[in-house]
Image (tube, rainbow, N blue to C red; front, side, top):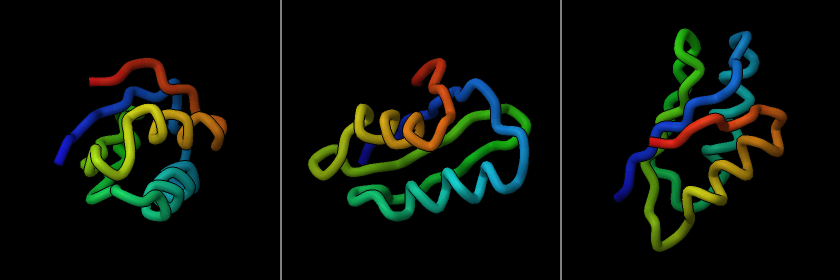
Length: 71
């Protein structure tokens, strides 16, 4: 299990959180996810044998949220 935190450009409302978390729940290999409104960060635990950080970042960006950094 791998855990990564993604810094997003901006998360402006509760519907943004629901949109991102809903999408992450549908991705195969995601164990847990948490969108932190105040810091515009997304913390994701996932199985690297099923999905990758690149897939997660790409999925977030397809929703219209720019990923600025990954830790």
